[in-house]
Amino acid sequence: MNHEPSADDAKTPASVDLPRIERAVREILSAVGEDPERDGLKDTPGRVARMYAELFSGLHLEPGRHLQRVFEEKYDEMVLVRDISFNSMCEHHLLPFMGVAHIGYVPNGKVTGLSKMARVVDEVSRRPQVQERMTHQIADLMASELNAKGVIVVLEATHTCMTIRGIRKPGSLTVTSAVRGLFRTSESSRAEAMSLIQGKSHRM
Image 1 (cartoon, rainbow, N blue to C red):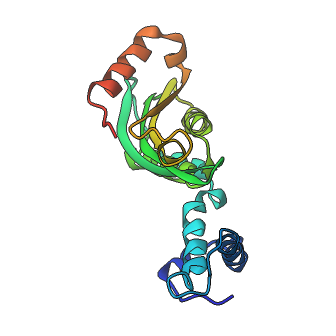
Image 2 (image 1 turned 90 degrees about the vertical axis):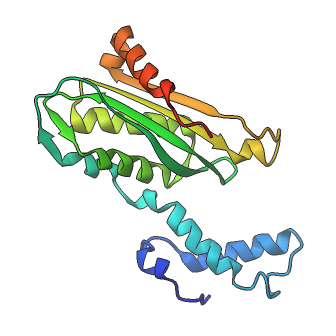
Image 3 (image 1 turned 45 degrees about the vertical axis):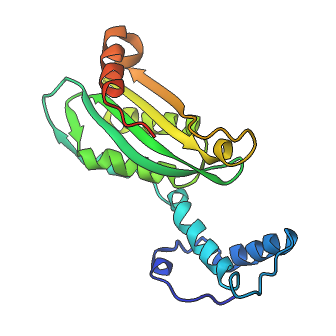
């Protein structure tokens, strides 16, 4: 099925079958009683296909590669990047959840660029996800790729599968955490990190 050219097409991974998504969207529209041929919906399947290719682009990327560019540095105190925004798709209902990630680590002789941590969050989020798994994936990548002495990851997110359907509780916030190494064994280090995160943490 043809669709209008878009700048996003150049970024679409070859493994994403856009025509197949378009056909599926047309089926959904028909199944709920809509007419996919009416003016307002005629181009919707193509737009949705390109949107899914963008939102799930992380499936075709290896986020750990961003952490392989490191710098030797004799710094052994905590490095914390707070309020890294992200958007993801809940794999249970294919509805978005969005929020912020806070990542802290204690280097073990090497540090990574601060923007690299944000890129990891971005790529891990761009796939069908659950917040709990996403939290652990980020922590595991930080721990393994940097060989860090300790890693702490905290995610705060609003889930539209809770706010616009089902229980419909707008304003609810889901918080998940994962700790590795020093932050798991040292209560004082973990408390310090949580204090920094919670002290001025952005709220939805």
